Length: 290
Image: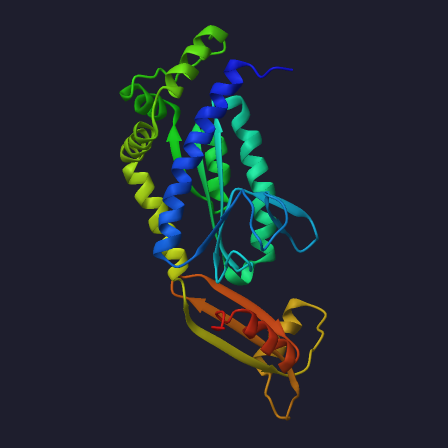
C-alpha cells in the first residue's frame, strides 16, 4: 500500500528534527570525550537498533545513549539516555510520553549506580500534562513548539503547517519544496531553528554537562551495634530509650552508608557484612582506566 503524502511529510519533518538534534549531541559527545550511540550499525552490538536490557531482562529500544568509555567495538558505561519525538497533534502526546517513560525508567533503575541523565527532545504539539508527566520523573526536556518549527521552515520558503483537512496535493507541494532545498540550505534551516530555541537548548545541554560533572563529595559510614528489644507499647518504648545504657560489648548489627554527591544527591544503603558493604561502595566507584 502506497504511503500517503501526509505521512511522508510528517516523516520528513521528524527525520529532519532528529538529524538537527543528533548533530548537537555529536558535538557535545566529541567535546566531552563520550561515545554517542544511535540507530545504525555498530560492531559492539547486533543490528541497527540501540537496545539496552533492564534488570528484569526486558529489552528497550532507544534513540540516543551517551557512554563513558564506549567505542565502536565495546559498550561503555551509560551516562545519558535521551529520546526524541515529533507529534503534530496533542491527542498523541500523552501516549508518547508514557512510551518514553516505559522505555527509560526501568533502565534508570537498573543503572542507578551511574545516575544517568535522562532527557527528551520533543517537537510539535505536546500537552502540558504530557510535559509535566516527564518533568515529574526527572526528565530534562528540550521542546520545539509547533509554531517555532513553522516559523523556521517559513524563513526558507516552505509552509510546513498542516491540518486534518490539508489535501494530499498540498502535502505533495510541501514535499517538492523540501526536495528543492540543497544540503547547505537545510543546514541553515537547522541552525536557524536552534537559534529560535537558543535559551532552552542552552539549558538542556547545561543540565547534561552538570550531570556528567557530578562527583562524590563525602561518604558517611555508621557501624551499628546492639541487640533488638521488642516492647509492647509506646510508653514502654519511650521508657526503654530514656533508661538505656550500653553496659555490654555488643556485636555489629550492620553498616549504614550514605554517599553524598556534589549536586545534592545522596544514596543510602545498609549492609550486614563487610563484604556486602565493600561491594556496594565498589559499585559506585568511577571506572578505572584500562
